[in-house]
Image (cartoon, rainbow, N blue to C red; front, side):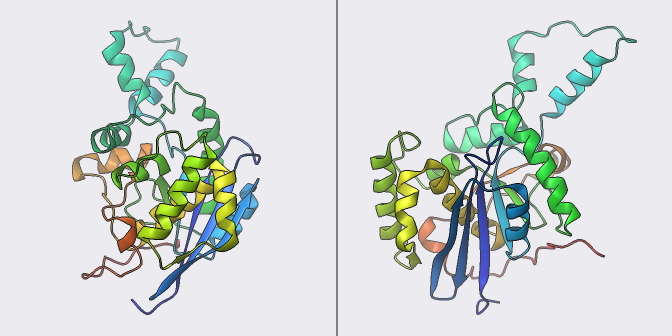
Length: 266
């Protein structure tokens, strides 16, 4: 398996095509190459790219907190007594998923809330995209334990790698410094002329990091949901965080990870 060529893809998803970026990385035993980096992509382009990769990482929440889903359903059911307000502690359970709490513990920062922040609009698009990917024949497991599609969070990935990335989303010079660091830590990663687009566009930069995180998932170097949260993660989604530094992503793990099912039976 270590001799195989692999492709991984990353998507920085936005609520519409504008602001959505797609990256594809080709992996061989001695190098990786940024094969594609595109802006303003639509769902059809993403689905087409996903058909030709081992794993695609999407930067967007795959679901909503169980408590939030139950709260909204109960609120819409006028036949039953309405739930009294449970205070801020209760409302926080509506705002964050189990994976968000895990990321907070690992990275020191809360992800944006899919139920209370504007990323909810993007998550609505993502729900449709996941359906489109499943319809194309890909196995979609929101927990990331199996399947060809994983939820990723580039900002948290950079934090677990302990990269200094303050202001990277707004400052091109910070992104330039991160591209330089990427080249230092992974000299085998050929960015080519597309590196400049990573500097110019936060969306492009995050799509590349998403494709790197997808490589971690494809090779079994990530933190899966704990057994007690597996069923919840299958509904809410689970953010894949690499369990190795960038520089180790090229080599195959010393113990081969379990083979991932990526396609549904036809």
